[in-house]
Image: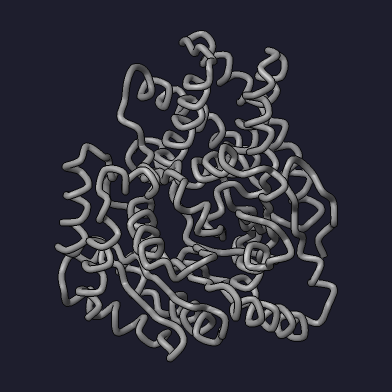
Length: 420
């Protein structure tokens, strides 16, 4: 059972329901959401690669659980990796089972010629739309949801969650959908343990993001840079900053930029930080354990796996420092690397003790090797971030409509034509 400790700048919503009867709690939770849905419209955005349809043991469970809910006004699938009509229509038929008289289902065919034409029209106005990937898919699908003006709350989660159930979805949406909470953004968190390996997962969060952000907060505070320290303290408040699950109001969604690289999650938290008061931000415990696909470390391939992920995230934080008045040099970044590395070793000791009492396998050698690789990846990020570079943030939809006033109409026409 979770604790009830409140730590950091945001509200933490714990898994205290674990002390209750699960079915009774689920019934009460969904009854509340059904009540809210009579006064506001809830939309679910699902970024999905066509390849994920080939793992029906995972995706079938997700779709079946979503189908059993009665509070969703619409489901929008951002479909990537489907370069031809045959695959698009296969996905349409697959997700079509979610449609009900009071719930619409739409697929945004990111690779399709109509959506590509919309993206090209935006590019011609000198607005970067990034490259194909989860970030771009989420951004274009979000534009469709906003253009319809038929959603007040949007929830987002991935389609590769092995341990998915309706309770996760309900807890993800309830904090923002609840009109009494006054929350505008809610991030999911959870433990990540492999039952088969009896080991901790989530290496980039545990071994890089948390100790790196923790080190940066300390450095900024000792330097008397309170604004920067507060920014990193905010990020440190999140228990799983790289979780792909969050919910937010459409008012907030209109104003945030979306990263198209692996910095998507941390950049989204940063966008929220600059636009929302901390008391309107929460994180919620979604599950006792969470399983999805694991990425390889890929130390020799900078374009893949955790290697690319760490570089993208580190580059985002380094660029944030530079754009907020902190002068970075090779010597300062070298200091950051040493500080991060020593801090990460302290975290590894804590993880080892935690694993020991919980009967988990823990390979301190492999964890320390991963940290050593991550340290070198940060230097790669620094080399890449030197000088002027195009931002990896796709501008907010509020910004896009200034340059392309009829973009929502164009996007709605494209999606509806694809789904006709």
